Figure 1 (cartoon, one colour):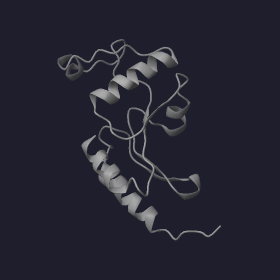
Figure 2 (cartoon, one colour):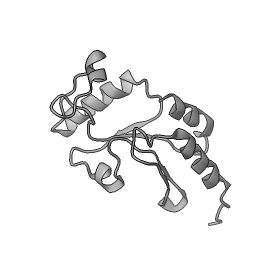
Figure 3 (tube, rainbow, N blue to C red):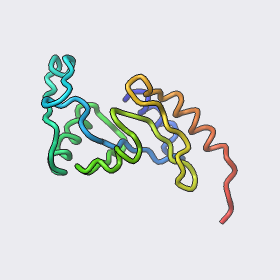
Figure 4 (cartoon, rainbow, N blue to C red):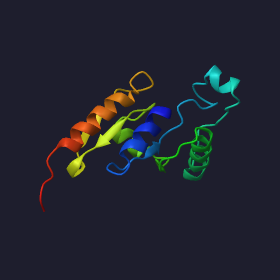
Length: 129
C-alpha cells in the first residue's frame, strides 16, 4: 500500500481514489499462502455481503489503508466486470472511460504505471460544458 498511499497523497486533490475489496484471494478454504499462516491471517471465503464486509474491514485495518474502501457485493459483479482478481490497478478517466488498466497482480501491480496514466489524464484539455 505504500506506493498507492504516496500517489493518493500527491493526487487526491485532483483524482478520486478508492480501493475496491473484491473476492478474498487466499481464503482458508481455498488457495492458502504460507505467508498468511505465518502472520496469523486465517480468513474463510465469505458467503454473504455481511461476512465480506467484516473481512474487508479487517483487511483495511491490517493494511492501514488510508484512502476510501468500497466492497464488491457477494455476487462479484465488480470483479467480473473489471477482471479485478487477484488485484489490479485502474484509472477511470474523464467521461467514465477506463483510462488505464494495469496487468493482473501481484506481478502487474505497478503503481508507477498508474502514476503515468494519471499524469496523462490530467494533461488532457478540459471540455467546457
